[in-house]
Each structure stands twice: as C-alpha cells, then as structure tokens.
Image (cartoon, rainbow, N blue to C red):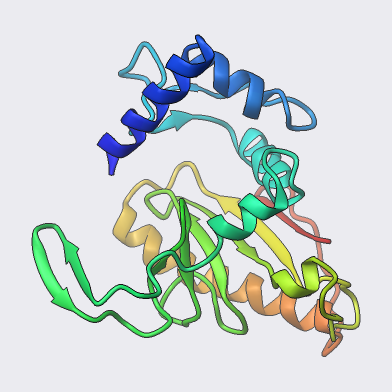
Length: 221
C-alpha cells in the first residue's frame, strides 16, 4: 500500500541522509542510457511522493524499462524475486475491505511492483507467465522472462532468442478514459505478444513496418 512505500522510503532516506528526489536521480534516472531527463513529480506535488505517480515521457519510460530488463538498476537476483508470484500461498484475499477465499488461477497474481499473469483475461500471458504494468491502461509495459533460460540454467528452444524472453511498451497519452483504454489496449497488447512469440520462437516470419506516428518499443535479449 501507499503507507508501506512511504515507510520504506523514510527508512532509506534516514539511512542515506538523502531525499527521495536525489535517490531517484542517482539510482534510477541517471543509470539509464541515455539518462531520464524528462521525468518529474506529479503536477500537484512539489516533491516526489513514493505512493503517488510521476510525470514522464514515452522515451524516458522506455529507457527505464530497457534498464530494468537488462539489470542496470538492480541485480538479476532481485529482479527474479520481483517477478515471482509473491502470494503463491495466499488462502484469503482482502480487496477494498472485502474478504474472498481463493483467487483466479494463474490470473491477476501479484509480483512485487508488477502484476503477474498466465491468462488471456489480462494484458499478456498467452504463452508463458508475464509481468505487466498498466498505468490506467493508457500506458502498458509487458515483460516476459523465463528465468531458467535467462540465467543459462536451461536451453531456450526458440529459434531466434537465447533466453525465451522479451519485453515491450506502448502508450497513447491522449486516450485517458481508463475503461475505454482497457478494452482497446488489451487486444493490442495480445497482438504484440503473439507476434513476438511467433517471430522469436521461429514459428513464422512477418515484415514489420515502422509507423513513426505511434510510440511503441519491442526488444528481446
């Protein structure tokens, strides 16, 4: 929750003697390549709020996803923990004050900072577990990573990837109705996921035409 984030940040600030803005600049914004120079606090706030949002640009957000995926921000061990299902043993869920027994199988599972899924009901997860971060569904980031293959512990069976992993990000900053955006972007996200899986696995080859009017980035390692 927001209070947990605030407590954690207060501890980090007390331990380092630095404020949150300084820490974000040192450990996140300046570690990307190039640096994230167009990200700032939410417009109603003078300082960064660990439980709120920030303003950024598509390019800066893509730089963040690039650096995150490649382990430039934190270690691979920490990334692996973040992308795991952190509630695998949960028996009862409490959401908005309501208690529910069980949860949808392989759908809407929490990671640490990401949603984790293996379902067609969400933004990804048609072929393997994925991690996704919708920002009111007007901005979507998806990471699909098989950790045994990523760590070299298991050979990837895909023809065009050594890690069976990829990620993509797209956003439409002018489409602000979250419910309408959800309905529009879910099939778009599934289409991108399907193309990436088909291409990297070697099941088919397609010609990709770059349309510079849309901001979309897709990568694999």
